[in-house]
Image (cartoon, rainbow, N blue to C red; front, side):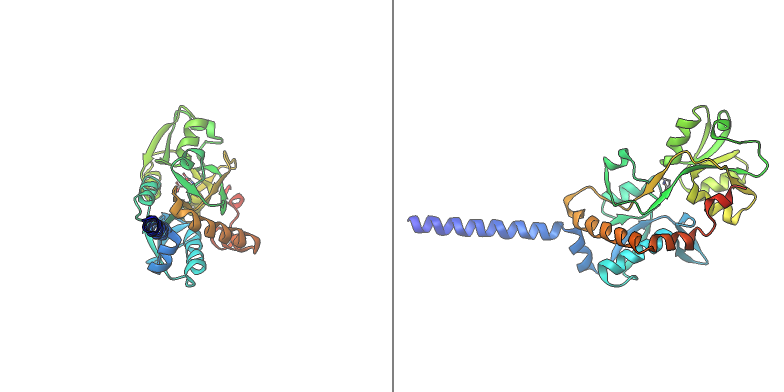
Length: 266
Ligand code: GLU
């Protein structure tokens, strides 16, 4: 009888152990990606020079980062599928499982850290103000009482509300719509990351950035805040540390932001 009880206990614990291992396997996103043979990444399609479509090709700094991560994880930089995200939907697309990670000019902030995890920063941007050349706006406080374009849900929106509380906000869901609003004269200025505004100035030299930067913000790769994403985050952090050490992040910056933002001020 005693032997039978021992046998049952051994069998039950064996089954439990198998169950746990299977569950752990299923829960490991890095293994899932390797089995799937494809990395699914949320990126911007309208934020030159980070994620944008030109001549029918999706390209930019964030797109290059995603290709480098696919190469590291899957051994082939082309094994990556891009899904368009915007500042308003990137967290829900990540948390619903539609994408494995988000590489989309996304600033690491304390409030976002409550709902997602971030990698080490791979790029630093600062909030800036873009005006049409010749406009009599010199500093962010001159924006009080004026109409200013922002993209909803961005750190640009939060900073502007803080630095110019009397501003009249014109909120848009995407950078494309926001800049179109600027072109139509809907507002006198646009407030956003200098790195993103630089992309508009590259193509539209009638605009310029004011010299001041009102924040310093690190862009991070975002992950779901769960144990399954831990090994993926670990792998991505190692990749970012290596890219920084070998100077590849600086090369990407030189490739996509060839004019230092200082040159865009005048
Ligand atoms: N980096 C800023 C942010 O994360 C603006 C860019 C963006 O939203 O994509 O809010």
